Length: 174
Image 1 (cartoon, rainbow, N blue to C red):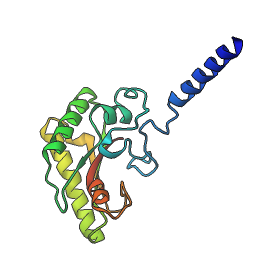
Image 2 (spheres, rainbow, N blue to C red):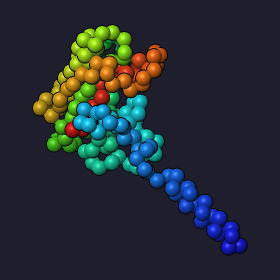
Image 3 (cartoon, one colour):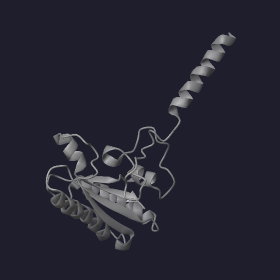
């Protein structure tokens, strides 16, 4: 009987260890974000599946979980889609809750096209994101923009799906 209890306790301990948040699945990104901490979240800005809640109020993790951190664009476009506007509406609401939070918006492109073209297009994408937030009562001085062109792909693949993931603007808490 004692062996069964010990086996059950050992199983519970292993399950508990598997469900703990070690950061590997918390939605935190790698190095390279505009503030040196990387981008949070995976595709769609949803964060990892194992994250514990929304992070500290007003944090990057909270933004990712509450509003989403990225929007996507069509090829050679900087016009906002309905999905992008819905994400930006959530970001604007989130930013209104945290009036002291400042953000970066990084515009990105897929690998096709020249470096100069993609830097300019990435800037137009970041500006479209910023301008939408400003039009929804977010103070322009809280938002900085940058273009990485094709230098920071979310997906290094050379497929239509990879390129679609790389045509984005990512919002990060400063």
